[in-house]
Amino acid sequence: MPSLVENEDPQQNKEVAEWMRFGMRLGVSAALHPLEYSKVLIQLGYEPIAAVPGRSILGRPIMVLPNIFQYAGHIRKIDGFYGCYRGLTPKLVGSICSMVLSEKIADRLGLKPLEEPKDDVNLSDEERYFQFKHNLKRDIVLSVSGIIVSHPFHVISVRMMAQFIGRETLYKSILGSIAEIYKSEGIMGFFSGLVPKLLCDVACLVLTSSTVFLINKYAVKDKLGRQYTAGFTQFAFSSILYPLNVVSTCMAVTGSRLMAGQPPIMPQYSGWLDCFNDLQARNELKRGSSLFWRSAGGFVKPTFRDNRGYVPMPTLAKYQ
Image (cartoon, rainbow, N blue to C red; front, top):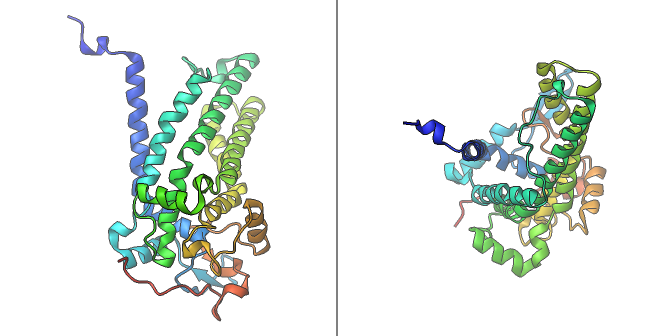
């Protein structure tokens, strides 16, 4: 009598394994959401905790802002434990939609994954280049389609989190948020900040994949070294392109009815390039890039600051 293992479909097993890995990624994303919540507020320029005197690595006196864990603790102090997970539901829904639909789009375009991906050490130059080109085209399609499909949920998630600044309740649920965005901004409101996000993610993907391919082809040959090369290269390009991430977050909020997207907290931007130029002029394109050691030296726009150098924020109270 054949065993159950022999009767299992390998393709079905592969799909189950992929969904299990995807579920684990969702679980990690949910667990780390309070840190992501804090990072979004930092990217929006919201600093509710005054900086304290400190010293840089070189011993120079500076004003130090709270790290990401202290920031998350402040959110928990104001809104409680469950308040730290505001905006999580639309983020997870967007991730699931992105996973399902982007795979279907790639398969429909004839960009199915290679049946037997091989270690390129044992491949000829032609085979290595074909595998790289196929994987890159598939990854670009997955990235672009996934971002476009999930972006409306991303906008809703960011705005739910941005409500912490002005204590609004405009974005309570996904359906209510959809109605609010459509009523106040129309269809285009669901794609606020899409262009810089696409540029950031796609450029990072192309630059990382191409650089790793060239390094592996001409320099690094051992498998362990290639793993370190891929991780370091992705980190380097992500850091370089990080300002586009900040611009995307700001553009997802600006123009809305939230206090976080209105003067004096945020100027009215005519487009993402206007936002980029404004943040660049104020040296704030790297907001949120450093999560553990944050100095207040980047805040140089005194027009919207009080005598301590910070935006005057509303009095915090529990959501009604």
